[in-house]
Image 1 (tube, rainbow, N blue to C red):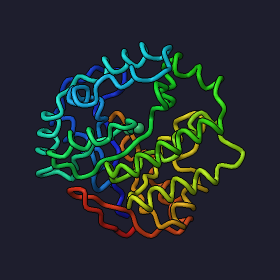
Image 2: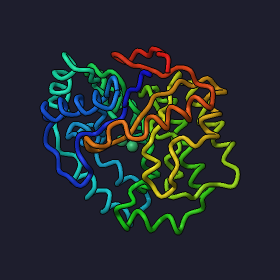
Image 3: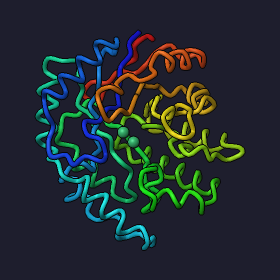
Image 4: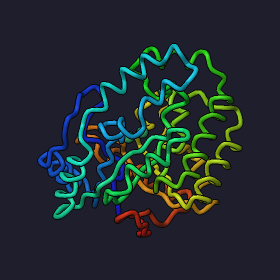
Length: 289
Ligand SMILES: [Zn+2]
Ligand SMILES: [Zn+2]
């Protein structure tokens, strides 16, 4: 069936992390095999690594959203601890004899994607996921921090979707990444515009022009919205635009690997998809479902 989980983290967000552990990755690979997941990509967040702090800097200080600066600074300080070289070395070691790919989940930082590309260029990544998690200083998908959650009651939903979609377009135009992660993560609270189709068309067009794939992620089932990413109408739009797709759990711990994949496969087939993407050294191949 060609199931591959192309979105996995090593460290839960509440955990300080200083380095990758080969035994943990071996254990991930074993769990995957048991669930008929053929291959996994380790895609830790770029902002987990000190090198991102050095390269990108304190980007949140540039924003006008004064009230959120401290929260972002604290978030960054908590997360930005591990060493990217050590991560690449350990995941590469696992990659030598296990069905494990070296990946990364890369956030969109306005006007700084050239710096990000420069930082990542020397490393032998198999697949880079591109994500929009931030609208200025607002980490809109962090539902664990009241400071960020409160904003959902104050914003205009159409405007927020516009801001999100614009960032996806700029991320795609930056040619930094191979796959758009959780394509409509902006729906996570369940607040959705009356007519989201114009946003769907823009996201699909941006991916088509950038020759990017999109992930189909079971992570949305665990959020308040209770639906996978992308929503079925966005997935249908992707199909019409011939956007290739991957499968993703976005798990931050071993037991979540491959979560809901049999159901996702059914959804994908219903739309008409017959292949999934496989990556190796940032080259994309199609394999039958
Ligand atoms: Zn993400
Ligand atoms: Zn993720």
